Amino acid sequence: MYTELNETMIREISTKKGEPAWMLEFRLKSMDKFFNLDMPRFGPTLDIDFSSINYYKKAGENVSNWDKVHCSIKKTFDDLGVIEAENKYLDGVTNQYESEVVYHKLGKELEEKGIIFLSTDDALKKYPDLFYKYFNNLVKYDENKFTALNGALWSGGSFIYIPPKTKLDRPLQSYFRIDSMALGQFERTIIIVDDEAELSYIEGCTAMSYSVNSLHAGVVEIYVGKNAKVRYSTIQNWSKDVYNLVTKRAIVEEGGLMEWVDGNIGSGVTMKYPCCVLKGDNAKGNSISIAYAKESQILDAGAKMIHLGKNTKSKIISKSIASGGGIANYRGEVKITKGARGASSTVKCDTIILDEKSKSDTYPLNIVSNNTSTLEHEASVSKLSEDKLFYLMSKGLGEEEAKELVVAGFISEFKRELPMEYAVELNRLLKEI
Image 1 (cartoon, rainbow, N blue to C red):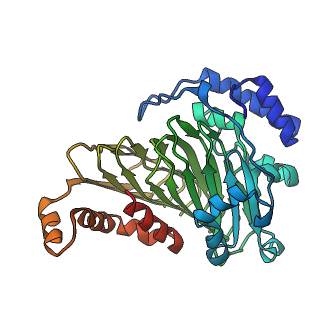
Image 2: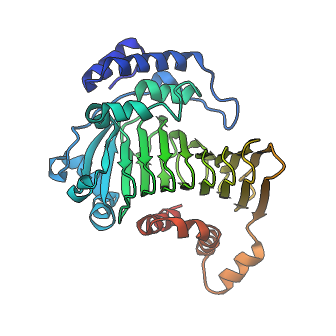
Image 3: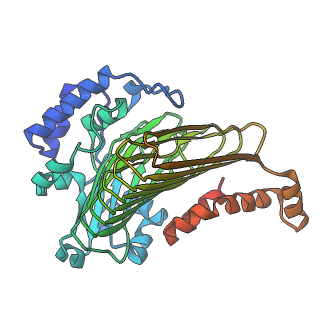
């Protein structure tokens, strides 16, 4: 493990990975920026002891046969249902354990179509020109303290390229797992979906629970071509000792569609605001999300929509639930620029608070810079109705079963957008709350 962030450590990691000189220079530049940037001035207070973080841990080599994965790691993913899901529902998978991808597989028939799906580390080696073109292009290393930290330490993640007019029958998936105490995980995902192509991508995240905080600071860059479609679905179930600080952004060309389906039910603190930059005319961006904050959790989540092209459209639907003293906030931004004439955006934020100890706030920033566009914002906050609870219990349900039914109805719109196996997983996780 590497526990002290300095130039020597960065050089050792880059050398072990066999990286080109330009990547080492990029890492060192990012590290310097990290030390010089302040913590975010908005959202939850982040009390992170960076000196206690283990910044890099390699658990095994990247293989395409589960029999070659260390038995304890294989059992972890098997218990999570990842191996079963691969066989039933998916066209390709990448599974990351600690700092590196340990298992990756893509069917030969997809490779023959020109689809690229591999770990981001392998993409740097096998497709250096394509990698260089898109890396650090949409999410810059110096945007904030955690994009800089990712730039210095990125490891693992997925690199995907879908050729023009290519559609997959089933989704691709990545799964990220932290098992070590106080680990920092800094995966980097780059997805390029060319003109008139389509991709459904799903992501899962879990971690063991310890008394010492871990840190997850990933970066995702997505490029949606003309008339292309991308759906990115996430169920995040980190343990309560994980800081989940992620930057996700997509840029959408003419007629393209980007959809974020984002579930946040884990971590101690989450700050995550998936973004669509609607660059081309008639581009569309949608985000539907839930945040379920329980005891000792602060989930500060939402979405951002930046309208640049004419007649662009966006929709944000946010469902927040707070119980047991948890805090579930919506924080979002819609910006319709002067040149985005004829644009339209709808924002809908709904919150349900299940007890007197919990809290939820909404922090919207809505900017319209021309008089031909429309923006609608709707927000509602409600407490769990005692009458509704009494009615359900009068039908023979226990109090916890009644609350579970209320929550299930509240998030039903979100569940409809999930891939089937993730909707089943969400049901299971909610029953454990």
